Length: 307
Image (cartoon, rainbow, N blue to C red; front, side):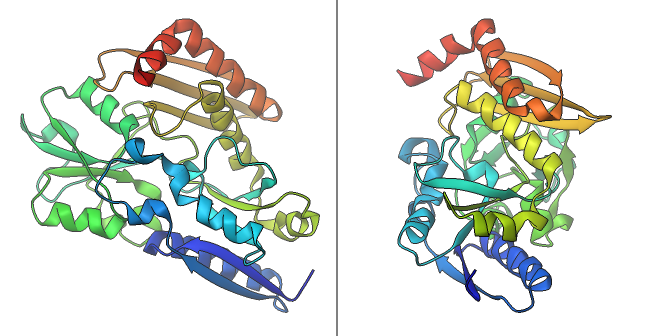
C-alpha cells in the first residue's frame, strides 16, 4: 500500500463532512498514511432546476467520482448509500459500509411542530418520490412541491417562506450539526426510509484487496447486512429514484426484519410487505421481499410508471 490515499468526494457540505469523517478515521488508524480529499462537482450537483427522477436519478451524484477512481486520480469514493445505484458498473465494488446514522426522515418547519399540524393547502417540499407518495397517501390535503439543492439551500428556501415545511434525511442534518432544525422525526411506520438512508458506503475498483483490508475497521457488519437486504429488494424491483419505493431493515435479537413498499406517485395505490430471517441471508431476504411485492401487484404499478 502506498503512503498516500486519495478520497473522491462531492463538494457539498454534507459530502465533504462524510469525506472528512472517513479521512479522520483512517488517519487515526494509520498515522503514517497521508489521506487527501479530491473535491468534485457532479452532474447531479450542477442540474438543480429539474427533479432527479427526470434527469437520470441519483447515479448522477456518483459517476464523476467513479471516473476519478477509474483514471487513478483517487483510490476510494465516499457516498451516501441512498445515492448509490443498486447495481454498480463493472469493475467497481463497495469496499466497506459504515455504521448507520439515524435512518429516519425529518420534518423541518419554522411554524408547525409536525405533519399533522399543517393546515390544508400547506406547501411541503421534498426531492423524493418516495416521500411524496407517502405524504399524499396520509395527507391528501397538503400540496407537495419539488425541492432540490444541498441541505443549506433547502433550509434557506424554507426560511424564505417558499414552503410551510420540508422533509429531509435526519442523518444529514445531524451530521452537519443542524439537528436543532428538526421539528419532528418521522417514524418508519409513517414514512419508510429510502434504501440505504443514513449509511455511508466506500467504493473502490475491484481487485483492490489492499484497500478492502485497510478499510476493514470502518466496516459495520450489521449496517452492511441491513443495507444489503434493502438494496437487493430494490434491485429485484429495478428500483431507482424514478420509482416511489422504500425499504428499511433492522436487526434485533439476531433477526433481520425488512419492510418495503411500492406505490403510485399520487399515493392512491400502495403495496407493502415484510420478511424476517438471518442477517447472513440479507441478500436472499431482499430478493424475496421484491418478489413478494411483485406478487402483490408492485409490477403493475411499476409498469404504469414506466409508460
